[in-house]
Length: 313
Image (cartoon, rainbow, N blue to C red; front, side, top):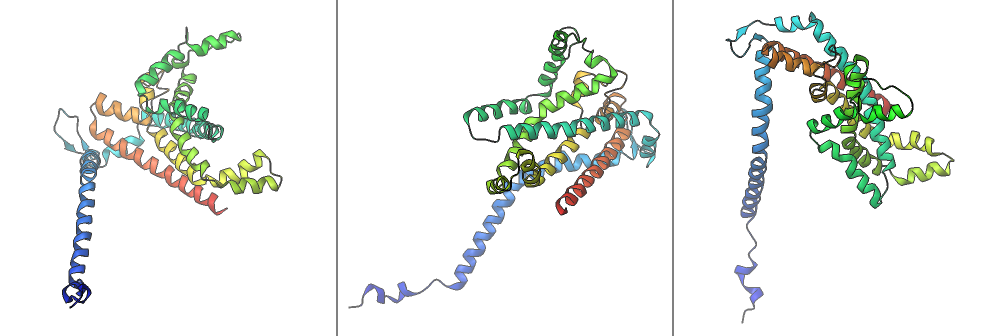
């Protein structure tokens, strides 16, 4: 009597052709699933980013005011930018904001991350509290700071009055308006950068700190020779995000000062908005936006080169 193992049907292996077809079917199905997941992001990218960029590129070479017909003017809008005194005022204000905001944003976020780089219930609560301004609306944040900076009853001037100091009219004086906006921006955004720095700090091996202590390195030397090199990539990411964000600043100036006093807080994006939706010069505003894109690209490339030079050294 033949056993089950002797059954020739059961001992016949799966044909190689059938295995190959099954593998091809699985790979094809995975490809289809992948494109299905990517379909919506691709559509959103094309509709809300790529198409507006193409339209803006076309408008930048035209004279278009929404209410009138489009007229082709070639590179005239780009030539007009360099002779526009208000553009240079906006660029100067934006550069002033960037020079103050980027270093302060890095210092405050990194210092907070260093203080909270430990595992305890209190630090977890503090991380959450510091992150709340990041997810708050810019209108709510500006309203709070508008009250804090009020020259009559704002808390800043009240505290300065305790020490006999007559506080300035923060948002109503040209020399204090931009620093006030920088202070609000740092407070509103450092929580997100703090989280990024925390991720970088927790990736630095503890063995390096122990080795530095055995070599007699103190807290400052450990920070300078262990922590900073260990978070160099994180520093590059945060600095790049801050540079890009600083050149795109708009909400704070629009809500708090409306570009004043005396155009002291008119930024490039604010000027683009004013030209596009205030003066209805859509073609000129589009040209300004592409010049801003070129400026951001240049500073980003410079930051990349500086980061590479620091890594090589």
